[in-house]
Length: 196
Length: 196
DNA sequence: TTTCCTTGCTAACGAACGTTAGGCTTAGTA
DNA sequence: TACTAAGCCTAACGTTCGTTAGCAAGGAAA
Image (cartoon, rainbow over all chains, first blue to last red; front, side):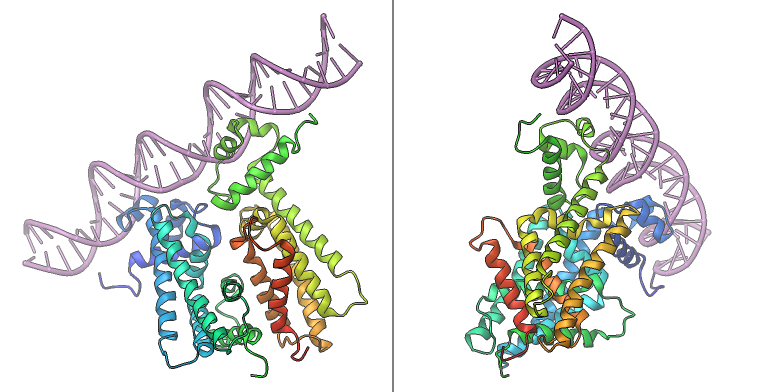
């Protein structure tokens, strides 16, 4: 029972994540998933209740990670908005890179959740984005950031970050921290007030 | 035969585009598509050869539009790289907004193309992105742009733009030209050399 | 040793899938 | 008037889908 590094259930989650990422949720069959795990399709149901449960777990676990990272990164109220935003960006990138397959599923496959999970998911997503909007708006109000339209800026910022799982490959020359720092630099440079 | 504004085949393309966008290609059945068109599933095959042909047409038509827009926007060799890049960005945004459903399909559903179409598609995509990379690199070499890593900058730039179909809705307060101009401003501001 | 829980198997279920064949209706053309 | 072609129908094909039932092997716990 306490044998492997990964429990069988975790192996299933992980393999499902990889398949959902490359093939898409709808185009991945339980038989494909079973085959990748070296077992039969029916056997998977000793571990899970349904195919959608797999997707549900992936999406909401990632949501948790994004929130936890954001909260930790922005916890210090004494800090100005700009560095807090920078830390939030770095946290976001860290989640994207350390769990890039799950992130890709999180970003692309959530629409295959059925109600009410889908609505719940979208609410979380909106709440998360609102965190960035608020930070940018604070920074703009304090004159730390140049962002005439905080909502627009937040959208663009997250868009750039969320493209990362599309090209990032774990074996690359840049470390996760490098990428995070670099992306934050490039994006915030355009936002920060000139002469800073 | 010359009756409608849209031929029946074009109506099918258009409805398929909308469904592929919201439901995804794999999760959209021919019976769903037929029902949305007010006909039966089998009848569609009087107009098309296969479901994948629909996806193929959408993806490659959009590729044509992106290329045509880019070529026109950057045709003037006498212009410096920075304004040519700006025009390319505006062209990209124009395609994304005037055909946002098809763009979303183009961006998300291409992986359901089977070989060799899939490889062909990816080659086109790479070629298109190379155009942006080259423009940014030229601008950086000439000192017009601040981009220590042109590939990185191109990736980030297109990422921000390609997120557009996720939030843009045709009835919004901003015109297509407004959005194009605004996005180009926001993105290039971070790229352009300070004091310009 | 007995009991149980985990893990997996085989076989099958009903449903939905993409696609095809063949026929009917209608409108335009000769 | 006869012919043709488009457009759509119904019915069905073979396949694959997610999922379930029932059973067997193996190790842990009693």
